[in-house]
Length: 280
Length: 274
View (cartoon, rainbow over the protein chains, first blue to last red):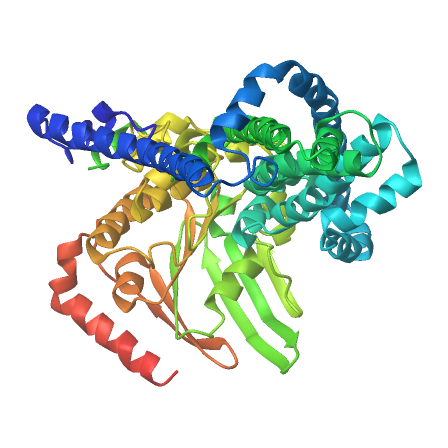
């Protein structure tokens, strides 16, 4: 809340009561820590059950490795894991940037030219429903090997959700806000900058958060189909060699990167959408 | 609460004699029809109306009587299907682009990503801003509507009544000659509504702005208006123009006087036949 305490106190609605306030804040802090710690505790409990089950039932490591074995590989082979993360990260981030910038540019064009939107938006919605794993092989066939096709896959995967969401955000504006701008004789450019663009930001960020994880999936799926390096290539190699601890460790590295990317976008969202986040 | 703040507001210079005779709003045989899948709806049918400068007209009628449509015609949001609408002697669009019109919407229509202060100053940023010398001090206006100290708050932090006060301050920022209000207090509780009614009258008396005010409350229409325009529905047409002869300044307590009660019962009787 950006209304400071003295503002509201000045309105006479609140009274000073330090002890009540302290109890309230302490309870609020406890709730916050509870919500943070409980999932962590549950995670460790699940890992413990997994570890015990692998030992108790004598499950062989190549079928399902114990968490401790995965952790050991994660430490001992971190150099290989990180070397392979680099190309995947470059592909995912480049694809994310290219795909989203293109989507934002085209959504903006749609907002200015209704004819363009009417012609191409339904196609975008249709292509958006094709699953990632179905689109990837087509692109590898089209673009061949190397880093470029992976970037292209990540970009195209990011492109459609952002285009669809951003277009909706630019279009679904409160009609009274548009009438207000009309009464104020605002130009189309002013309507775009002061109303439509701002209105689209929550839609854009929810698309960017989806794109942050799908860009990584796109790069990995691209690497499955034809590559010698990267997280996707390492997954394929580890699977063929029955090196399950390495496979799991690779997945952990990929997931941590994906989660960090998602976290970065969420952080940016909370910085940009101050009026929106404050509500939740 | 905000009444003390009114002393800071200076009244507009008295209009020249020629202007004072001229009408603020003139409608001549204005009709508005909408065509839908289920056929054509006549929202307004041959409306004749004149509102003098500095007047306060309330528009009252059952839902579907076209009272909002009438307001939208004079604000140049809706174009009449036939007939002519003139605002300050010219086309409504000319009055709009001169910033002579301020519009207050039913749901405040604030931009949620702007603070209270930024919402109030929006009209100064777009469409060329206010004409020279007509931009008012937003802080003074926020004081006028009783929101001093809330400049940095966002709309979601305000109550419905406070949001509507912000939108009134926004409508007043470029000193419009006309203020069109479309059921602005419809969603508010009765106590807040009473207070805002009194404050609106004070603003009107101080600024000399011509106000057209749509409402579905008989009490509000009678309390605020110098004249009450009663509209009948399907098709929307003028039923009766009732002059209100209550002493000034008006206070909420006045609603208990026999004169006010008689006026309200007359309006109610006419409305029942609409």
